[in-house]
Image (cartoon, rainbow, N blue to C red; front, top):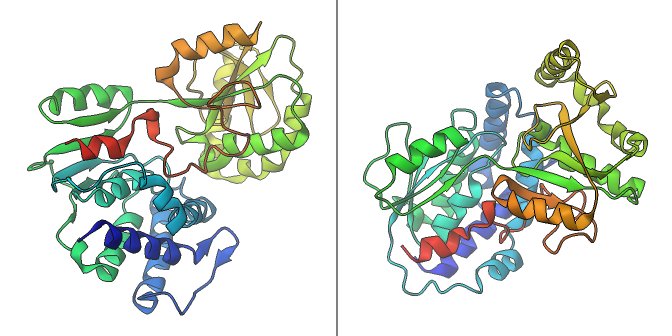
Length: 352
């Protein structure tokens, strides 16, 4: 199977996913193998939603729609044009996936297969329904993928390299267990936003998408704000209010109530609006329904701090502050070439 065959298969997968959007699910009878897979995938979405209370239908569809937009001929070719795939010998690459948001491990899965390798996937039990079904679709529209995609719930064995995503604690285990294998080991990271006080209400409203999408469970979700001293949060609270229905989700509401009780009993200073708490804290990882903030005295000092803490940060959202900043509202819409932890997965795979 050559590179163009692999590209074509993922383009077709993107077209298939294009039927599942946040505006609704709409069958397109012209899509290849749709009679075999459309209803089945609707059922997998239902199972994923029932299995994991954080995987609401809207969040699942948001993920599917995002991948549909990414898997176009233009995007895939823009992504791969700077790599040389000609001398790649096929290896078996194990992927240990997280399960915090729907299809969170798909980019690794895509990178391994587009590079010409076989993939051995160990999924999180929290996100086990969607990807195996999409793999079956790939195998049908491109039969040469058969035998190159394996899912397992057992201990990993007989592989040549590994990509593993987990917490700081599991990363230590991964580093020890896979010390003799080429590897990418990902740890906890969080995303931050820099506010200057000059943001428009539209920008702050867009920021709310970075904060609340997937209930803040992703590493690309903003969990902390950096604000000037004496920053007034009124405009921020007004702009994010459109997300107030989020408190109706039971798991989110339980976390909100619990964390609020802890803060009140501990007599911590905080601001809250009925569905989000804002607390001054130096940490990057904030609990669900909580946003940490820290003040800065100068942009230059803040830049230095972010440079020192770079290994803790996934994305920085800002407006004309940093060279590699992400615009407000765009953290959950990464391009194919936006690599987790800024580690080029394809480059790693081509050098094995």
